[in-house]
Length: 306
Image (cartoon, rainbow, N blue to C red; front, side, top):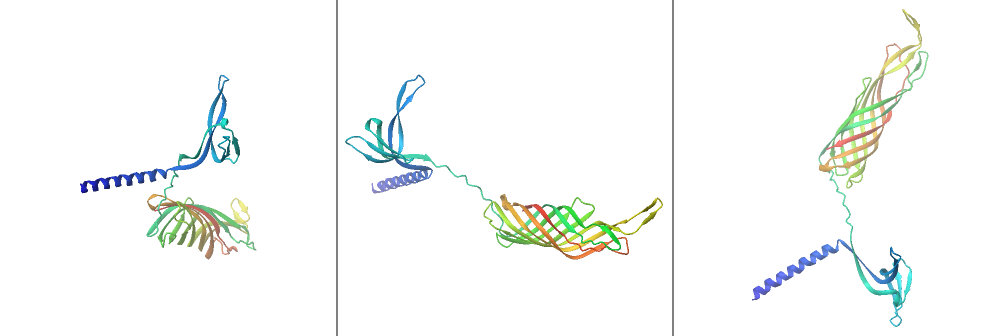
């Protein structure tokens, strides 16, 4: 008998335990508000013009109830004060509970980011190179290109190693496409610092120092008269093959969108400035124009990282 009684006790305890758990779970999904209420009479005119009475509960706080007269002093939840005689209300109640379902907040799925290992990036960059030539007229050259603007569309790629979830270092390179008259490429080292890796969309600071190569044809006017079988012309337009090698500094701001499987898409805006290592102007003439090339610009890139 003792064993049977023990089993019954355990069963009842488990039942109570499960019931308590369910109650707690349900209570977490509802809001409970407690108010004093008074049901006051209202008049309503129906569609046939007849006056009908109904009651409407007002929520608030009972300030005072006079049992001898039945007068009820009541403060509504809107802060207004009311005084009702016994013939103006049907009933009143202290501490009435009102329940409502609690709206569940839709939790946004957080995609994990890499915090170790290697990452490969590939994408496109587009931008503009501003190239002041520093050209000065002299006794030989009376005109020429003073500033060039080169539109870029580049294939961009890189490999980086994560130092931690915020920082990574690696190699990056770009090669200009869609232009047969200009050659531009760069290759070098890059660094990124991600400000808040716990967000799906996080800003980061990109920095890169690269070796850059630029080559294109620029036109200059030489002060001489050229005679041909059909006559003559002045001045003589000469095409110069310009080659610039430089250290290119890229600095800017990016935003990274985390995807599933620790992949991401990056969008970055970079300012660039080149520190000229060498510049060469090859022109079909014994005398070269006076030039002092500088290069700066801006680029917008979109990259897939995996």
